[in-house]
Length: 104
Image (cartoon, rainbow, N blue to C red; front, top):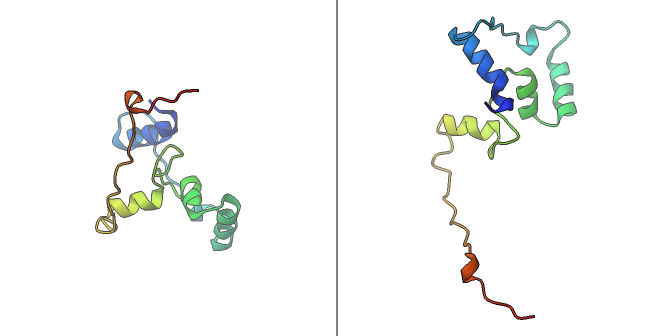
């Protein structure tokens, strides 16, 4: 099991009854003292809305090992960018026996 996904898997297991954990959800705005000003300060401290949502928004979409960020994944999931995606040509690569020999 990949460690960054562990909390997500435990939480989902609790939601579906596959483990004995109790899935309690607390959103950031339900915590006393947290308002839009607090949210904006935290976004500034963390550097992005995506990181804020990962840390405080109960979202499990982002990981440092992902090629795409959570916003892109959300758009793909909702088919908002399906028509905007332009296939990129594959990068050429050479096999070792195709490399030119170099004499020193």
